[in-house]
Image (cartoon, rainbow, N blue to C red):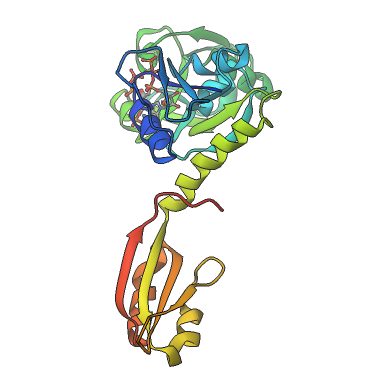
Length: 281
Ligand SMILES: Nc1ncnc2c1ncn2[C@@H]1O[C@H](COP(=O)(O)OP(=O)(O)OP(=O)(O)O)[C@@H](O)[C@H]1O
Ligand SMILES: O=P(O)(O)OC[C@H]1O[C@H](OP(=O)(O)OP(=O)(O)O)[C@H](O)[C@@H]1O
């Protein structure tokens, strides 16, 4: 099983972090290599450009890939999106000069749009029934409307800084993107692919949860159970030679603060809150 991951750029580090947290540590992950083995003898990592990864998966050079949805949609929309990994979050937008006369998609009829995403852009305008020339560029897209190469652009934005700096305003949103785990339709159901999907999903599930451990007076157990919004109820254990019970539960991170106040009011003591590495649901 081969996983294609970004070899550089903003997606490289978070992707390797995620693999590591999922238990797929690289065993010889020196930078700038093409391949790396992982601790799982059946899983190899293939490093490739973020934009090339969908092609590698489609061609069979890799079995699954991790890259932005924008890259998948541009290269091969037939690939199967298995899991939203929740980073590399950005939007592909149609933008035009703020002081120009393009206020709507229809205003671009007969015009030119520059983009690094020609396929998505063509599909978008075909869908809107607006006739444009698409000029493919390989970077610095934001400059093109100011040098008369294009009337508008389709490009990535996240904070909006780049558009603002180039005095471009958003006309419409074309696609919301984030990093995905994806596969070919014929391998999407493979048990090993499912194993990788489960491992990555377990890291995401653990991210917004905390493990709570505490001692609870036996007579307050039912009250404590009521305030712990844990998954499937808490685990309750006797403590040798003591009246109190040990109670463990998984709770949503954003509920930890409130839950602890309630628990203390019920006499819970020695409350420990820890992070969870993985949670297989
Ligand atoms: N500003 C951003 N905020 C969040 N995600 C982004 C941003 N820009 C790009 N991305 C996501 O990261 C992916 C890769 O972008 P990045 O800029 O790291 O690669 P790249 O520069 O195209 O790589 P290469 O240099 O190999 O061509 C994009 O396809 C998109 O999904
Ligand atoms: O809305 P913002 O937060 O300003 O982000 C948007 C910018 O981020 C990306 O470029 P990046 O910084 O990765 O440079 P590159 O595409 O030249 O690698 C993208 O191509 C935009 O230009």
